[in-house]
Amino acid sequence: MNVPFPDNKRKANDLDAFWMPFTANRQFKKAPRLFVAADRMHYVTDDGRRVMDGTSGLWCVNAGHRRPQIVAAMRRQLDELDFAGTFQMGHAKAFECASRLVNIAPPGFDHVFFTNSGSESVDTALKIALAYHRANGNAGKVRLIGRERGYHGVNLGGTSVGGIGANRKMFAPLLAGVDHLRHTHDLFRNAFSRGEPEHGAELADDLERLAILHDPSTIAAVIVEPVACSTGVLVPPKGYLKRLAAICAKHGILLIFDEVITAFGRLGAPFGAEYFGVSPDIITTAKGITNGAVPMGAVFVKRPIHDALMTGPEDAIELAHGYTYSGHPLACAACIATLDVYREEGLLTRAAELAPYWEEAVHSLKGLPHVIDIRNIGLIGAIEFEPAPGAPGKRAHARFVEALNSGLLVRATGDTIALAPPLIIEKREIDELIGVMRKVLQSAD
Ligand code: PXG
Image (cartoon, rainbow, N blue to C red; front, side, top):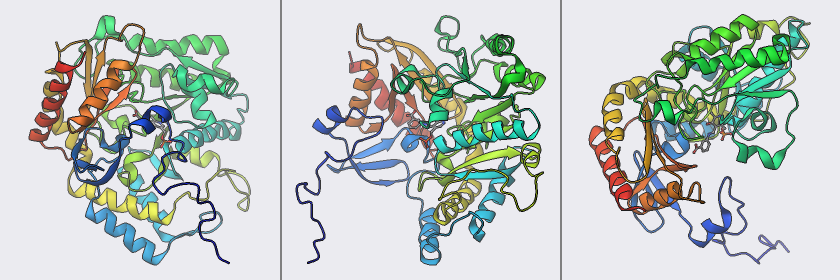
C-alpha cells in the first residue's frame, strides 16, 4: 500500500518541526509573526495586514518584492532547463550571468565564482586567498584577519573571521591562525554623525599592529564589510578603508570586501568599493544579486588572482572548490532579470539621489526616548538605544515588535534598529516609514 504521509503525528500547520535560524524559537512559536504575500514595498501578514518592508526582506529585496520581470524569467527558465551542473559541464545562462556581473563590477574584477549564499561566498573568498598565496610560492601566508563586530556568515571560515562574540562562543575553538582588528564604533567621538564619521581613520593602523605581532609574511588576507551592517550598522570613519587598503598593499595582504549587503546599490553606487573609492582584491556578494528571489552568491576576483591559479597542466582542476548549485540555472535566470530591472530603473545609483532626504528623515528621530545614536549611509539607517538596565537588546526587540504591529518591518540587532528599505522607495514612503518609527519610539519605554 502506498502511504503518502506515514508520519501523521504532525498537523500541517504545526510550527514545531522548523528549527528557525537566528530566532528565539520558543518565544516566536508562542506568538508567531507570519507573512503570506508580498508586492513591491509591502508584505501581507497572515491576518491580512499590509506591512511596509523597511529592511528589504533581510537586506536582499533591493528592487522590491515579486517583480514581474524576475518572476517571468524564473518561470521561463524552469520550463526550459531545471538543473544542469557546472562541474566539467556547463550551461549558457551561467556564462551569460557571469559576464553580466563582470560588466557592472568595479574595474579589474573580471572573474566570478558562483555560490548559493553570503556565507558560501565568504568561505570561498578565504579559500581563494589561501590558494592564491600558495600558487605564488607563499604557502606560509595562511593567517586570516577579520574585525571585531564583523559578520561574515555562519560557515566555519566566516564564523572564525567574524567578530560578534555571541555568534562565535558556541562553536569554539573555530579556525586557528585568525586574528581581529578593532572595531570602529565610537559613540564618544562620533555619535549622531551623518554619513561617514569624522574620527577613527587611525583605527586602520591596527593592521600594522597585527602585522608586527604575526609578521606580515604569515598573513593571507583581511576581510571587512565596507559598512558593518549586521552588527548594528557601523559606518566606516572617513579615510579608514583607504588606509586599510594601503597597509594591505604594503604587506602583500589581500583585501576582501564582504559586500553581501553593500553590493547592488545599497549605498548609491553599484558596489561599496566604488562608493568608498577603494579597490580591494576580492569582493563577496549574495542577497541583492537575485533580488532575494532565489539563493545565489558570487565572489568577484581580479585577474591576477585568477590567473595565478591558471598555471598548472591544462587538464588539472585549478581550484578544488565548488558547490552542486554553483551557477544554478534558476538563480542565473533570476540574476540576469534582476540586473535588467536594476539597469532599467537606475536602482544601482538611486540610493545616491535619495540619500540626503533619507539622512534628514532618519536624523529627525534624534531626541526621542533612549536614542543614543543615529547613523546613516546610502539607503541604510540605524537607531541605537541606551540598553535597558540588565537587559541588553530588549529595547530594540520591543520596538521591532511594536513597529510590526504598527505596519512596518524593521530589524533589531543588539540595541540597534536597522533600516534598509527597497531602493524603489518614494519620498512619501520614507515619510511614512519615519512617521511609524517616531510613534513607536515616542510610546515605548
Ligand atoms: N556577509 C555579510 C556581510 C552579511 O551581511 C553574510 C555574509 C551571510 O550571508 P548568508 O546569505 O549566508 O546569510 C551576511 C548576511 C541582519 C541580517 O539582519 C544580516 C545578514 C543575514 C541575515 C540577517 O542584519 N547578513
